[in-house]
Picture 1 (cartoon, rainbow, N blue to C red):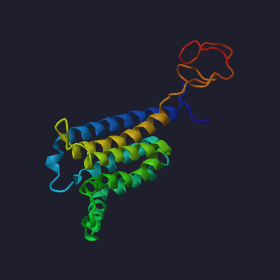
Picture 2: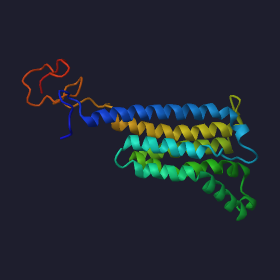
Picture 3: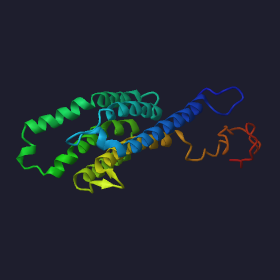
Picture 4: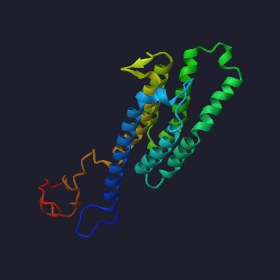
Length: 228
């Protein structure tokens, strides 16, 4: 049985879950806001062919690790570490992959320009599907990232060049970040927030265990609960 604070019905684990939820929400909101705010300036951050600014990798490394640890404090360091590795080395494997494909003549073999334009976003999103699935432990996590990656890729390859004055590439970068951070944050909420009401043997207001009590009044918060 988890340790409980003296005189309280909440366990230490419950408190940690609440703190994880708060941390996860703050990180997700900050990342989403930053991703959206940078979208209008993407044209100044990228030069020439479609590339992702080097700042994107460290950003994913930071919020990927934090949110993975918020989902699973005990085993989240494994997928979190993968986020750090992929994020910190993003310039190396990102530009290296494109250079290898170009050197192999893939682009010069008749590949449509639209397909080459969307390739950076498809490659980036695909690389992060595994750590997202690993961190969330849910198939829907991988599906959401896959869908946002597909949309970002379509937007840069075949979509309109601008949306509300923002380049399609800037919007696509924001979409990738929102997909990653939003999926991880949803997993944090799912595993920490009390979406499902407590079982009948617990108080519906504070979660205090009512097993063995002969009264319908909760001794912790004073709320009236129906007897089980």
